[in-house]
Structure formats: C-alpha cells, structure tokens
Length: 127
Image (cartoon, rainbow, N blue to C red; front, side, top):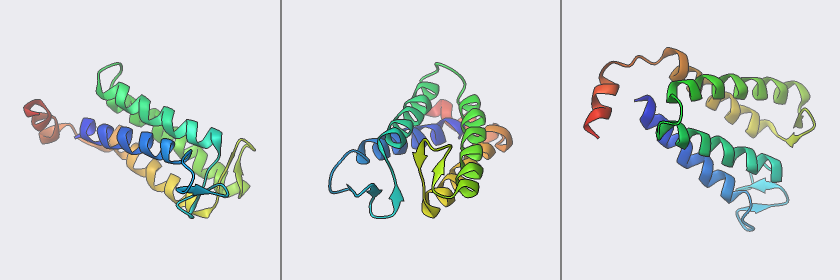
C-alpha cells in the first residue's frame, strides 16, 4: 500500500509542478485560482514527485520517503501558518496552500510511520 501511495504522490506532484508553469492554469501566481505558487514552489513540487517515483522504483525505501517528506511538509505547514504569506520568505503561500500542506503532511506521516505492511504489501507483489 505504501508503494501505491508513492505512485499517487509522485504522479500528482509532478503534474502539479508542471501545471504551475502553464499559463491559463496559473495566472497572477495562483494555480487554478486557488493555490499560490511561484517558480521555486513549482520546482519543489516537481522534486517532491520525482523523489516519490525514485522511491517507488527502489532507489530508497518508499516508507523512508514518506517519513522525511511528512516531517518536511509538517514543518512547511507550521511555518506557513505562522508566517502567513510565505515559508521562510522562499515560497509564497496562502491559507489554501497551508491547509493542503497540512493534509499532505498527515497522510505522509501516516504512510511513513503508522501504516502497517500487512495485506497491502502482499497485494503489491501481485502487481
């Protein structure tokens, strides 16, 4: 199950990273008119997705990806809520970004630290 989630995270983050550079999907620094993005924010999305895909392909454990990713996104979430409109002055964020980052951090932390191997891993072998 952790690897399936890694695929989902990888594909979604790569698509979102690319979408952030596409005029029409992004205007005035707003992706889909809701999420604040900028060049660095888009690159971070791309790198996050590529790291997930690298983990799924066995370059390092997918569970480790989610552990590190969850902690980092948790910190990004806290900084976003505290600072309000940016994270360390590097990337611009708004409330929609902060709430989404929180949800992403919770899912990643659960996948990294709380999700049991169990039946999900047995199903993975059948794929």
